[in-house]
Image (cartoon, rainbow, N blue to C red; front, side):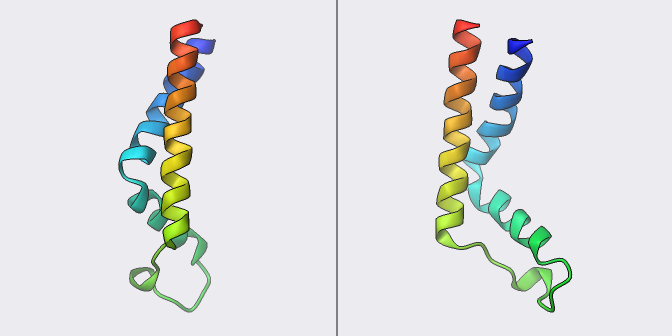
Length: 70
């Protein structure tokens, strides 16, 4: 069971750590549904990109710990 969690954390964390801008922009586009701004005008804030990267690195770190100790 913990192997699955470790692999999930790695599978989600690695892309978030490598491509944080794309994931943050996608989330902003989802948030803009229903607003008057078009998808092409939506850009994530710098803090959101940084937070996405930090969370991705944290997920990779936790996934590796679980993979090595579990």
